[in-house]
Every structure is written in C-alpha cells, then in structure tokens.
Length: 389
Image 1 (cartoon, rainbow, N blue to C red):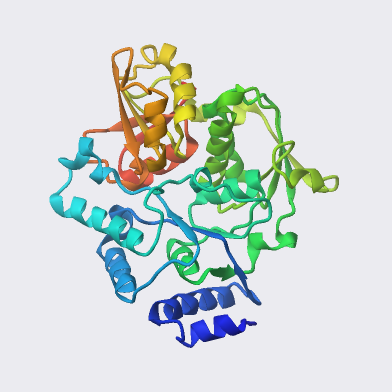
Image 2 (cartoon, rainbow, N blue to C red):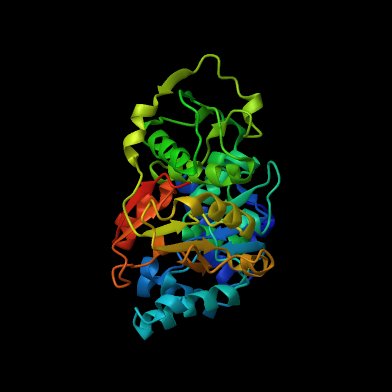
C-alpha cells in the first residue's frame, strides 16, 4: 500500500500519539478493503455519539483519545445525540445518563468538532461540491451526498470517520472511485410519487430489492418546497434497508446524465408493492425531521399537516432539527402549537438513537421511512408510516 511521506511519518508517530493511532486504524481498514492508497478529505462527519449507542466503552474510548490530545484537522461535524439532554425528557432518564451524554458532546467539541452541528444533515452546515472527497458515517447523509450533490464518500463507521477527521485522510476505495459509481440496474416506478410518506415507502422497497446501484426513473408530483424533504426521506429509507451509498435519480443526480443504462436490467415497481407499508392513522405522537429538517422545511411541513392533524388523531408533534437552525426558527416565528396540538422541537438530538421506553411514548407516527424502520429496532417503541404529508 502506497503512503506519502507525511502519512509514513504520521504512522511512525512523528506527529503525536493520537495521529499515529488514527493513521494506524485508517491504514488497517484500507488494507482490509484492498485499497492501494489514501485520499485527502475536506469534511468528516462522525456518527455513534448517543450514549445509548456507544455506552460506557464508547465514552471511555473518546476519553482516551482526548487524553492523547487528539484534534481534528479538517472541518468535522457529528450526528445527533439522544433526547436524554432535552429539557422535556431529562427527568425521564437517570442523572448518570444525562451527565454521560453531555460528556460525550463535550469531548467531541474539545477535539474540534463543530459544536453547532450534531445533525444528520451536515450538508446544511457546509454544502460539499461535486466530486469532493468526504469521510461521512451517517448513512442518510452519505447517500444524499453521493446521490444529490455528487460528492464522494463511503459509508464510514463512526470510529473510522473520527480517525479520518484526525488524519484528514480516508481509504481511496468504493465511492471515491469513478468505476464504482456506475449504475447496475434501472428501477422504473410505475406510479407518481406525490407525498413524503410514499417517497419513503418507495425507498424502503428499493433498498430491499436492489442488487447494486439503482438508476431510478420516476415521476415526482410533490410541491417544490417539500421536494428536498421527500428526496431525503426516500434516500434515507433506501439506506435503511440496504447498505447502499449511492442511488442515481434521473434528472436529479448530477451524475445520472452521464450514465449508460441501455443494456441494464430493468425492475418495475407497481403501487401495490408499496401501499401496504403506509397507514392513514395509527398513533397520537407524530415525528417530523428524520433526517433533520430546517426552519423553512418545518414551515412547509406544518402547513401541509395542519388541516389533517385531527383526522389523523395527532395529539403531539415532535420535530428534530439541527442546533444551527434554532436562530432561523425564531426568525420564521415557528409555532409551539398548531390547532391546540403541542409541538416539541428537538434541536441537535434524535429519538431514533434514544431509549424511548421510559418516555411514555408507545407508538410514533411518521412520514419518514428511516424512523419507521429503526424506531422499533433501536428505540424500543412501535412506529407506523403515515401518509399525513
């Protein structure tokens, strides 16, 4: 495996113990992936920062790395934390869990990770350019960066993304290579996609049936102000039911126009194959913002769901947002209730990476496929995919 002089020195410990450790991890992972060299990155995004995900061992690892004076050398963001640190929920968790969750955030900021991040949509803080090399560990952000922005990142693990942030390098393999970004099959959607929930259901289904990198042909009939929410939801759903890092969407993905799809196998999807995933009414709690939504998207979502809240039996709304959007939310005069229904904003956190069993929430409605897929598996509560928007 080829290393530059700087990389060799880093591996030998000339730039300190933390850099040596990080470079050692990156090199070992790259060798396992049969990579021949490393690539410099401009932005790293770290996942696995919820105490419920990483536990005592993960917290101790971060303590050890910080004690080695680790600092990130490229712009670095991090995923949402657990809701244990939100005032609305703090009393539901032990003081030990709250303190340890806050300690994880403190350690990450000490290393130089942007304290305004803690979001699954890092592209809202810094928009990568076409062809830019990244090391991102959040599956929904990875597939969005590759598919919508034309940036290049593999689906890194939380640890390798952190090591990449410290070294400024990752393995030159997978999605970083031109030859790995070509579509392998054409997905032809035989119905108009006219809601966020339907886009999510379609994504969940595509993730289950795809055998490689799909080239997706579909008609989108979604209001322009909600189009990006729908695309985020569809792509994050694909990434939830598969290991995909890229899906080329006709007329949307910047690399789709160059793709030669004439000789590829075609898979047709009929509405009957996805409709059973969607329910009209199922729970009193509604989650919006998976992936995170910004202030303008919240305004559009609330406008869309407001007339339907009573008929869908919604009694409380939770909205997950990036910390960086709090100021914008005030500018947009976003409400704390709609038609007498309370809205609880969740800046910098995510219910999915939280143990919700002690919160009193038993089942959650959501139009987002990622939340629908992961809430029962990780958070311990039931979920339903509702066509409220």
